[in-house]
Every structure is written in structure tokens, then in C-alpha cells.
Length: 399
Ligand SMILES: Cc1cc2nc3c(=O)[nH]c(=O)nc-3n(C[C@H](O)[C@H](O)[C@H](O)COP(=O)(O)OP(=O)(O)OC[C@H]3O[C@@H](n4cnc5c(N)ncnc54)[C@H](O)[C@@H]3O)c2cc1C
Image 1: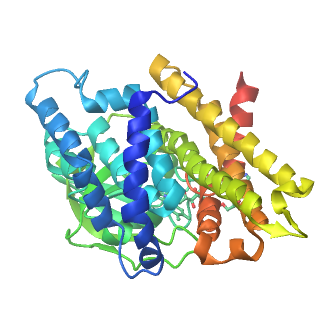
Image 2: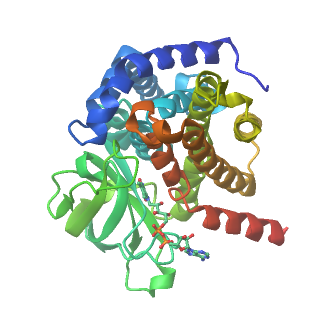
């Protein structure tokens, strides 16, 4: 249970090769905004057969009259999360931003449609998003509603014969500036008080009248993952583009997506930590100052040991998340605690890696400064560290 099996090692090796050969040389151009990550994501999906595998599994599911596709690749992926986590780790070793754009498209947008959508929605929107033929995004956050995403939500959907009329703004949305398909959350307004309006999600398609997106934001990190706003002005959304039924409790489904996102973030942290640790260990043996390799100085050794502790802890957390998924165990406090610990560990390790590399760590050449900039987002996205920790305390106090 606490180690990678043969199949995971194979995935690790294949993705390591792709990332070193194909992704690493493009990171600089992506960071400068000269190229977008999406063509390379598609190349990765095609070259490694991932797109075709997911597409055909979903098509077969749709052909079946009953059942959710027990035994197919998606079911297997749900059963053994380690496969996906190893992929995220490998991408994040080179570019956490690239991993984030891929994950937001497939994991957040695609899986929301697969899990909640009708057969028609899965066919028309789910399959193209999950195979990355179309770019997906998942939009909950608003300018006035981040940590208080549900309570503070201002986006509204007013029922009008066979349509909902959507108005509102979403912000900080990964992939939004280029997304073809958007999952957007809004409150259904039937004239009841705001507090009683249920939150639902809708599938929107670029090109709908009244729907537009802003330019990509300039950011501290994750520069190779475009982030932006979505504007909805009287967007006429056919009722069949509501995700799930109106009677469903979508707040729970959205929290499930958030839970999945939070469970996926430790794998991004792991990629950052593993790469920073390996590179620092190597550098500490090679870099000579005062006539000795810097690894002989105890101050450097303590940093390396601290990195090692975080690396082992994050691996253990990931193994436990995988075990819990396999056993069907749910523990939201553990998910939130893991997310906050792993995010903080990634920031600490990346900062220590810069320190061990001295001035070279501050330069772009070693890619560590990028990992450090990208790591900070892990403490903000999918709920800030404080919000996650407060959730842990609240849930534990309720016991
Ligand atoms: C690069 C990037 C990509 C993102 N991608 C997506 C995406 O794809 N989809 C999406 O929906 N969202 C996305 N987000 C949004 C992200 O989830 C939010 O930024 C995050 O939830 C925090 O919300 P906020 O930025 O509004 O901060 P705020 O909620 O305004 O928080 C500001 C500060 O106040 C603190 N705070 C707030 N409330 C409390 C409280 N009750 N108690 C104690 N402290 C509190 C917070 O911890 C934080 O330190 C992304 C953000 C970034 C930066």
C-alpha cells in the first residue's frame, strides 16, 4: 500500500519522459505568454493515448442502457487514484501551471459533467472536454464571493419558459479566457429571499449571446495556466443545460468537486517537493564553498532533512487518500487538513531549495523560482490554508 506498483512506475516513467522532452523546453514560452498550454496538453493526450482511452470508455458507457461503467478505465481510475496522482506529480515537477490547466479542464469541468450530466450532456460536452478536444473550466468564485462562495454568490439564473436567464460575473477561473465549455454556478431566483435560493450549475458554451470572457490576468505564478473572468449578461440558457435536476442538492455536488480538487492538490505539492528535494540534494553535493561541498555544512543538512520529512509526509498522505477512496471512506476534515499541510510544505520546501541554491536558485535557469512562485497558489486555490484549517476545526468540534 505504501509504495508504487509496477503499473504506477510505468506511468511515472512515461510521463517523466514526456515532461522532460516535450514540456520542459516549452515552459519559458508558456510563462511569457508566447504560447498557450492547450496544444501541448492535446499532444500529451494523443501521444500517450489518454484522450482516446477516455473517449472510448465514455462512448461505451453511453451505449450501455444501465450501469455507470463498472470496470472501465474511468471506474478503474476512481478505484486507483494513484494513477492520476502520479501523472499530476510528474507534470507538477516541471510545470504546476500546466498540471493545473489540465486538471481544471478534465478533473473539474469534465468530471462534473460525467458525474452529474445526462447522457446527452455527457455525449455533447463531457466527452470533448475529458478528451481535451474542447477546453473546459469550472467557475464558482466571484469578485465578491471567494471563501464565502455559496453565501456571497451574486450570479443568478431566472427561470423563463424553457430557459434560464443568467447574470453575473465569475473571477480567477482557470482556463476561462480560452474555455469552450464552462461549468458555472448560480442561484436560481424564483423571487424567494436570497438565502433560500438554491445554488445550481449550468453548462455554458462559448458563443452564447451575452457570454464573454476577460483577458488572462497577470499573476505571480502559474503563469503558464491562463486565469480570467467570465461575464454573463442575460445569457439565455436552455433548461437542458442545467447540470443535474433542479431538485438535486448542487451545493453538495459542488462541495464534492471542491473535495476532489482538494484531494488532488497534494499530488501537485508532491511534484514540487520531490523535484526541489532531488535538485537540492544534488546541488549540495556539487557546490563547493570554503573548500567543501555545501552539503557538509549542518545548516544545509537541516534544510535537506526538513525537505525529506515533508516529502515522506506528503507521500504518506497521498497513499492514505488513495486507500480511503478505494475503501469508500470519506473524511472531509482529513482532506482539508491534507490540502493545507501539503500546500504549506510545498511553499516551505521550494523556499528552502532556493536558499540551498543561493543566487542560482533565484535565477530562472534552475526552474526552482518557478516552482516556488507556483507553489504559493496551492495555499490559495480550492480554499485558502486558513479556510481549510478552520473547516478542520469546525468539523472536529462538531464530533
Ligand atoms: C490562479 C488561481 C486560479 C483559480 N482557479 C479557480 C477556478 O478554476 N475556479 C474557481 O471557482 N476558483 C478559482 N480560484 C479562486 C480561489 O478558489 C479563491 O481565490 C479562493 O477560494 C480564495 O478566495 P478569495 O480570493 O476571494 O479570497 P477571500 O475569500 O477574499 O479571502 C481573503 C483572505 O481572508 C481570509 N478569510 C476569508 N474569510 C475568512 C474567515 N471566515 N475566517 C478567517 N479568514 C478568512 C482568507 O483566508 C484570505 O486570507 C483561483 C484562484 C487563483 C489565484
